[in-house]
Image (cartoon, rainbow, N blue to C red):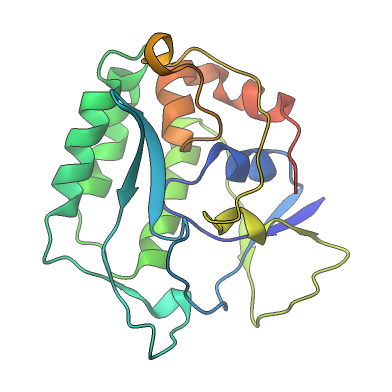
Length: 206
């Protein structure tokens, strides 16, 4: 199974289910950037429920840009804010201390383009899971990707397909219940080494 999907910021569990179950991964890098998507956003489980973390970017709707050319707006100290949010949300989770040192460099480097930074985030998660990561990139944008599996729709936060993944223990689930399809970070910090088994056991809805 060859799957095509967008490189996103600490991708959702759905994205990782698609990647974990694929024979080969192809990342879409020839698309036009769109706002209100997971290209520069991830969702975690905070004390008050679902919390979106947004990476600020330099983008104007008037001048269309390819996603791979959109720069990160580093005048805001967004990395420190995101790291503090992760600590507040997951410091009591079973595996936060186990993995956070491996992820810290992502919050200390200067991000250039959002696409390049997203690749670094994805590679870091695969390293945490001790899984090999081999992928290709698109060379042009194509609407019809058959016979490949088109998972690019997972990037759209407004039209996100509701996934029905198996519940796992979350830090604040006694307050707000199980929150489905959050960032891979939620699964990693809560399930640790069991993350790979969980991903392979899920059924993805596209």
